[in-house]
Image (tube, rainbow, N blue to C red; front, side, top):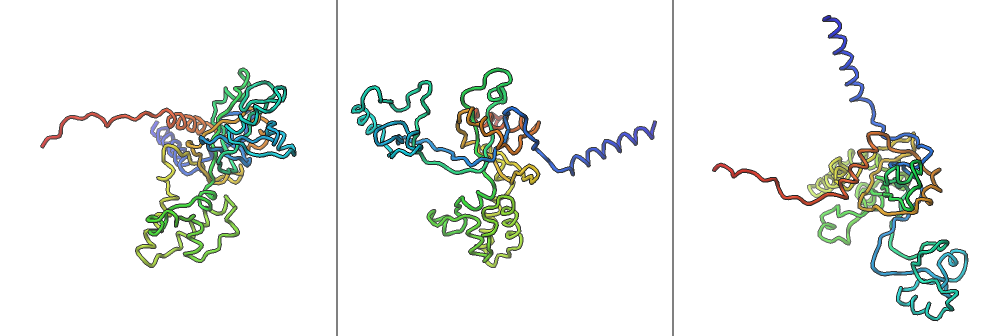
Amino acid sequence: MRHFIISSVLRRLFRWVKFQWSPVIPFNTCNSHLAQGDIFRSRLVGPLADDEVRVLRTEDCDHGDHVLAGSPGRVYAYSDLIERLAKVPVERRVPPFQRRNGTPSEMVVVYGDLFEYFILASQTCDVSGNDGPAKPFAAICPVVTMGEMLARERFPISKESRKDPAKSTTVVDYLQETLQKDFSADRDDPFTLPNRVRDALAEWQPATSSEKETRGRIKNILSESSFKKSYLYYLPADVAFNMPECYVDFTRLFSVVTERVSSIASNRVCTLVSPYREDFGSKLGSYLSRVATPSPLAPPKIQ
């Protein structure tokens, strides 16, 4: 009996140790249908809505599709387009943002960011088409690679830039200038750049207190605590699934036509596995539905 108990304890201990030391792999190959947590590698412009309505039309005010087909075009302010359309024959007049069968969505000019990856945020039942017709629109979130963040985003890293935002710079540009390291070969490689930056920080021996403070600020940008913010969802690198180190930014959530997402399903590189898919959906939902609450009520302190 004693031998059985000892063996059972040792087996459980072995399984626990094996679990603790096994690398976490939150990815798997995709299903045939679309699912929440599917990650696409497809160059994507993430639009940013604004209150200036700039509509792309031909010079004769035809739909923007004709511009892409080769017709001369221009960008109209909304009021200017309405004024010009009033002079177009009724049979050719297509009002802006008209919703009817066969009419493509209006083409507009907005500010945007460029991403290499995005993740499907809608519930699987809304986009898979298995339990019924898929919803016409799907929600997606851009996935920001750590390499993009280090090479493109500007931070107030040095003391000078903290006083003057115009002097902000990227992590890569700062390290390249300060440490005289050449990152040009890895700058556009999301798989190697983050580790090259970490290696450079590990080797850096700051000579002044100002440099020590700056090194600390750069380390904080890459630290675990930075990616525990409620609007970010961190994902580790996995070369087997062609996934670089990255994070999902919930603040950049936007909609796309579901049929469009389905048409590029072959661009999926992987999908989140359970329980990470549920964890992703839960944290996205918590972020979008969070409510400001007061501090907990407490009894008076004893003096």
